[in-house]
Image (cartoon, rainbow, N blue to C red; front, side):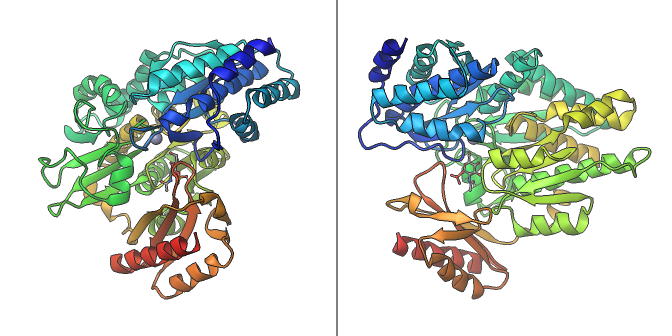
Length: 524
Ligand code: NG1
Ligand code: ZN
């Protein structure tokens, strides 16, 4: 019914001059500018569901961005992020300047994918105040193309990805099932392999986001297992991601808001606004947070899995294990894996979990984590099948780990359970985890520029192609610094260009980042 669709498209017009672009993890901007994009994403995901005759999903969230922003993450039937082939269609539809042009894009998708009508789309949102209006826009877009919007639920991003994946495999997919799967597997692992583990306290910064109520739901069960969780920044007073959350702790390496009375030496963790990232940290007297970032979580995971594989009978039978990182991974972590975990391959991809997830799926066991704590461990389905065919301690342990670790996308709850299990299974405290390797000092800066699209990159985003000449200038700065490494790329989630620098000492890393940030500003 094209005229109905047209009418609806006219209700959600694109603001003049806007050009929404599918970024690192979907569309993001100031919330007021989003209704048109969200409506059209609703239509797109309903058509995707119709084309594949499976359920798809939409999460209304802007993750680590501030409260006034919002965004939309698009979930494929597999539970992964939207297929990259469809990203171009998402862009074309979101950027259509008139309702008529948008309708033509809808018709083109229908023809190309031979889809008559939309299918079912699950919708979730985080705690932002703009969520409900945007959920309405999503539902309207889904309905406009004949799809069925499911009632919007307050969920973490990884919960919705998990639910979509499970639903399309005809497995129980409710939120209760989610907690039962992850926590039930964790309980079994703890009771089988660390029955006499000491009780532990963990203070978690929930970024004043959706992770707070969700972690509170898990906390009772975890405390029965001796893991006592105290959630700070639970959303009752502070603003979302303001001076807190995983992005803040990772980038600033400083005490998050709300942690003023937490004693130094305390074991802490921080998640982001939609609970798909997690980093650990320990407060130091200076107010500095000693960081255990995504790289370190990945190395801990690889050490655990390596131990399990070596302990098994017939340990020589090959299992392909790999770690996937991006250019933001600390050089020391990469060096450690290459030199000490020699049976674990290292793969580098561009930023964004869509790239890492894909690369990790090639391994029997693929560990992927961005330095910011966004990641998971994938167990290849054919490998998991070989586990269920036999019996034995290590097989059961691997199988349970695959249930703890969200197989659809990075999940802060999975990360937390993984770290706690790995430390108790290895018999380690934070000191042993720290001692694995020493991070090279690093600094990350954001530079606001008039047009970040002017910055294009190559070689997994480690080298600039444009603005012309800038890469040579960056390299000249790097050459002045011992153990220097630096790269520049446009953010896909914020209106900034990011500069990352690493060097032998903190002063040199800071100076390198600052010098390159100045070059970026001058060029822009
Ligand atoms: P951008 O803004 O494209 O750098 C950020 C993170 C990514 C990823 C996405 C999605 C950094 C440097 N970048 O992307 O790793 O997590 O957000 O949330 O942390
Ligand atoms: Zn997030």
